[in-house]
Image (cartoon, rainbow, N blue to C red; front, side):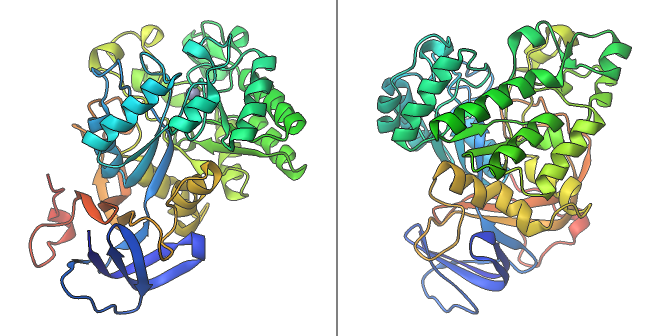
Length: 440
Ligand SMILES: [Zn+2]
């Protein structure tokens, strides 16, 4: 695939690049980023007015296939991904059956190659059957293509098992991704434990439930010298634990989700089941601590925890609904709106959090537009305002952001130089913004 992107404002934090450039992609890889590139026989994309960045990488996606194709498939999940500017996603292991053996990893990779619109990097299970009793065949999972291991959806409750997983993964050169909650402290909880859970009479999930396990795993990472990655961190104490451990040289990285950045537990008063996820939306104190962690560099990545559910599954009482919300298609706009427009961070830092840093911490290709790197590019229209509306490209619609007016949308997504999503106005002369329609 040979493509020339012209006149874009190229922002590539991996090489501290920010300026107007052309990008030439030849045979799937970046061959040049320069002023006014002349190339013949290539498809040209005029990106005047758009920002070009290394493709976004989501290190925490639930694609639901195999086994729960009524919620999402690899085809629809990756369609949602490219609509959100993602050129790669890491697929969590809690499918049915879980990705705890080579055959499942290979099935995911084969289906992604057949019907996926972006790159898919499988994450293997820590334990067989996600039961937390016996380690999965970690070396075999790694050899089959897993880029990390996680029992996500559940914590690894047994500290000895976690220690062994860290030791093995350290040898394999991959992180253990930790979903942190103490099941005893959380028992029956459906929302953050605090003022609003008391007001609404709902069982709470206390912040300390997350913090005790983060503290434990940071200590285990220190003891083993291994890399632990904390998934969807959501509390002030967890941010603090990571900050302190990092200062001591512990190999700990962490991610936060757009919904924990944007929303607090007061929103649960609407009883919308699209505000039910785990970890839950926290109180203002915790939300502010997470944002402070983004501003000071403690947080390494923004990851969606895209968790699609069928409409019927979410269309029940709050107590009974499954945890999780979708996020791939709204992540950039939510973060642009809540972090960049509000001047918490600059656009370059947001791109780092959504692309370069995820690649770096999980050791993935991409996350850069250096010569010779993958031709994965996201084109952004940061001026465009739009209202989040259904249907989504995802099979699911359980988003807490439907009806919200946000700024910053994805104009196009290229994977290996191929246009996999294109929402640019179709006409030759650019349509006025107000009437610009999303293509397809
Ligand atoms: Zn999780």
